[in-house]
Length: 251
Image 1 (cartoon, rainbow, N blue to C red):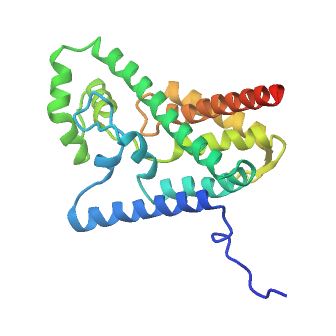
Image 2 (tube, one colour):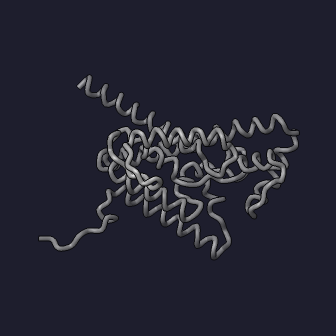
Image 3 (cartoon, rainbow, N blue to C red):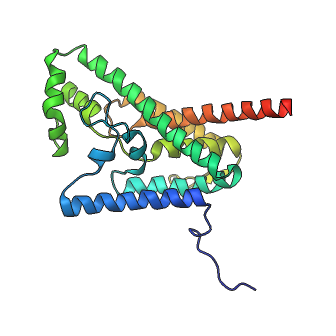
């Protein structure tokens, strides 16, 4: 009889395990770079609006592995551990990784689209020179924790220059997939500590994010990125189910 029990981490499927390790390693690198070299890697690897001088195409991927603080990475990695573990075992590593990256990428696309609409709306009520001012000085102000006193310029600067970081878009995609595959599974809420079916949790959480996205357009939380992760998750699952149906139909 085996008298030794394997750790929960070692028993994880490989893709989830490696995603956890990469995210934790990048967070450690973020902390060390700031402590030793006073370099904030979130400004380099976080996702910037395409019109910003700090935007680089690789940020569409790297932003998913960067986080803004200990609480941010803890909750994202906890969700990846809880939901990703089940989904990878059901789907297999290749499909799970594809889904994770597609939903994270889709979250970034929707976030940038909403940022573009917000920026254009703000610029309609501002002088043409405002954008050049934000491009020239706005980013440096954000880097030292400051922003414009004028509310509209501050919102414009944050939308244009602030980096977006985190695995939240992909994590919301995982949440959507779990609710889709296991709609009647019982989840225990932290507050209030009551059980709830997965399908109701997903619908409720999605509705809250949509409400907050429209009611708090200048929030530090990328609510539409969360919605984007869910939206692209639905698209991915429906396309996969259709392709699976067509393959079975002609086999």
